[in-house]
Image 1 (cartoon, rainbow, N blue to C red):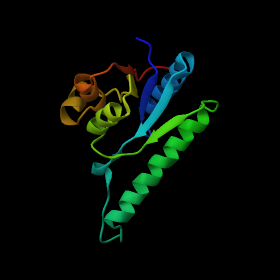
Image 2 (cartoon, one colour):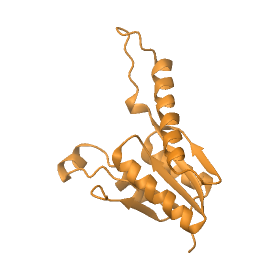
Image 3 (cartoon, helix red, strand yellow):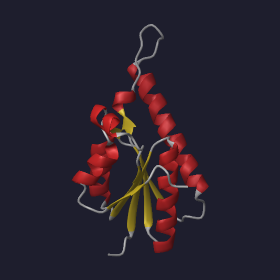
Image 4 (cartoon, rainbow, N blue to C red):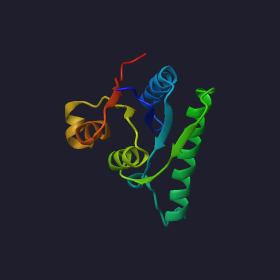
Length: 146
């Protein structure tokens, strides 16, 4: 199956940068269209009346971070003719699958944080959820990749 639409799911981690590099290189080799996705995780919103941080300010800060991160990734891989940008709000694992479906992606590329078994039991693993629930192939880059 030739992949003509590749969705690269990123965040602001080093693992994500490695995944983005692989995704962009693969898309370049296959002459595929690229979509880059940064989910604005509502669980990361910080609201504090004591500090004067309102829900809107927190949401705007997270959106700015997402846009800045996407800008950095896209600049690193200059020469790509067209890149679609997605910054939905919600649960990362569900939004990755939603955008992949809506955009009709043929492959999802993402990194993993390499958590231990105990960490995975205590916190959610976005990569594991996407792998288990995706209806298209998922390429996950390892944490020890150079």
